[in-house]
Image (cartoon, rainbow, N blue to C red; front, side):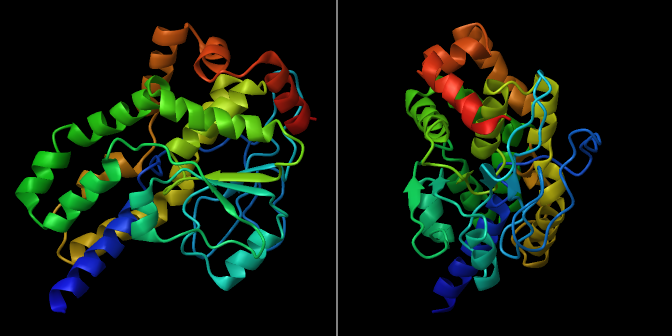
Length: 310
């Protein structure tokens, strides 16, 4: 019985650690006032670009309010990005209900859902499971932490290995036909009138979710610099939760050096650049990635802009 309890505790802590598997650190540049998210809101709808403040999730936000290169803005209340929704409280579910969501897309693979639990959603709202391979990162991280072995953890995550794992994942977003198909399906959903308001999420809301958001923003005309800043904002929203996770793992005796997790908890320009470099190699640029890599025709891209930009 004791062995089972310890394993479950470890899994819980690791799941908490992996709520950071897709983010960047608190040293990220502060958003400019022109494109900064609104202050966190405690109830009801978000303001433009605002964080949806919840008890059971820390990286839920509205992409509305970002300005395109033509001076237009993304509509508020149409597209939301998030981390795991498995730990939402009853109050969180009520707040989510106030967003009038029509579609929720979960990028987590079955193993992640098994460990963390299914999404908690308002009554009548069903999740669309759209798993995107994380190259085994979640399982590898659980193995490292669960071992409680500092030597094994260093061997698995230290000396740049964690960073290389993250870069491999970002390359896979572009290389893998299965992953491209899942990202494309989400963008097609957003081009349909009856699918929004739409929320997409993964475990930490930073890598699979971050790439989706970046590609979407570029597709509707948000300049690269602004889209990148939005990508890096996950660091601000996740910083405190990530720090507490590391402290908890150290206090619980699971990791002697929990800072080994930082490269997995952060989003970094280098990670995003890895995917963009792969886009350049395979497609010659983001426009061709959208049409050839994701298979989106011009009609879909036009509808995407028409639905989301005002």
